[in-house]
Length: 286
Image 1 (spheres, rainbow, N blue to C red):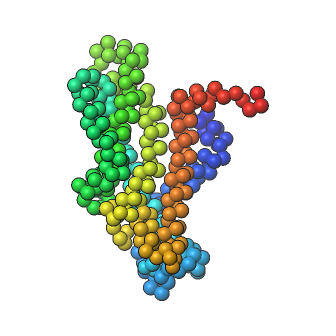
Image 2: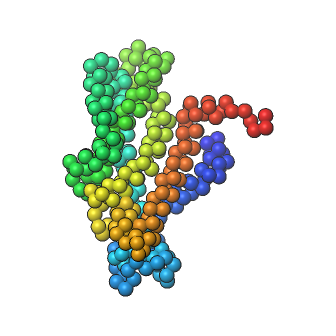
Image 3: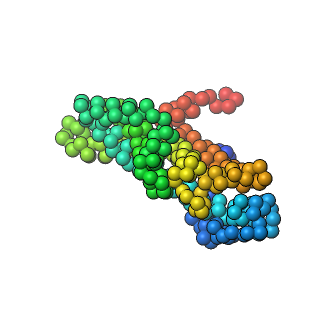
């Protein structure tokens, strides 16, 4: 209840969340709300400007309705932005907990391997992984998940290592609890809020990554609607129909910005350090 009250007290967060919810609902109900088939071609309406009858956002260079492609593309883009985060969080959390629990050679091996992977920029690592797995939506998601795992491991390890010194964790170890029980029942709940904040902050980044991979032609292939691919295709006609790449670009920007606003709110509410920092501020006028 406290969380909901604070949520409703921030108009910017409420507005950003409303935008995200609307986009998600449009993606889910795409077959019902989309005005046209996203791959239907209106041959006499190539590069038609916005607000013409029947096509409120106009058409692209192939004569396809942009609004319909945005709605259907939301399905692909959101899935490609969230699934890799979920996969990498599951794998990275398990490896990070193991590295924090088992000190010594195992800890050293995992962390040194992660340092090697950190030598590659995240985008480059994702592109390299995509080249290994091959083109396609599933392979692109696997590539992004693989690229993110090292960062998840480092975040989990940094949060779990201090948690090992908590009194109830040490008591559980002394009682002879199994390693899996200590990691999953004692340590994981204590760091879970931090992991939620980390995951939500990565979703907008990976939505952009997904769009970028499609833009480079290593993820979604035409004629499947996807925001990054729509930008790439529209770039070819930007001189004669600037709305074709601009509209999906603006949608991508707005959605990612709103997701960042929601993520910042979650961080303020779930991260103890942020709560203390904000709670320490004197009241206005005091």
